[in-house]
Image (cartoon, rainbow, N blue to C red; front, side):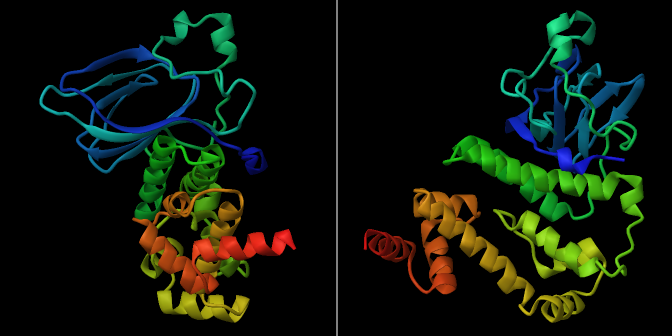
Length: 294
């Protein structure tokens, strides 16, 4: 059984890139995991004595310490988003790098740097099932954007986003969890936990939640309100507002907070903040500072 309490991800690299047609990435092994989403095109992956053909829309996970080869077709330039990460942070996490060496060529020190396979015996690599594709792929985009922009405390932001991704991977791919019955008494608390894990920068609708938990969206809204005394959307917005206030108090600019929450511009974020908190971000900070100075 997975020890989910040990999950504390470290994102090493996250970007979107295009592979040139005909590229052969010689056999190599990684220190970490590589999560790949094929935005367009695909390539041939040789791993564990098997051949896997990937295509647009596929999501795969390559585990640490396993030799693999990538063959790009001569007439294709696949565009893919990929994240290199450790499931559990260790002092070695910040020293490791993206490897291009064959496992046989690793030094003893390099072998000690290979992360243990957290999912050993529970996942069938490399293809992943993705229950809520919209939310999952949005989170991948969020991680890449956060790594690129590097806002204040971006490492924590990446950890939050990557934890949400791992939660979805575990839920949708570990067999004992796939048997989860939504009619169990704790069902609506799972909806709340999903919102708690995905409110930051993620964009999901009631239709997404309906697809994720296999319930009519109107029933979800009614059940959530009757259980927690607040509407589902209002609850999510309250989480985002409290997070925004916290980040503003920590010194992050309104524009930076808006980026973390996934707003397209400062104006959209300011409108949201004023609707939720009754005042603009600048007015909130001014009032906060005046109270602290008394």
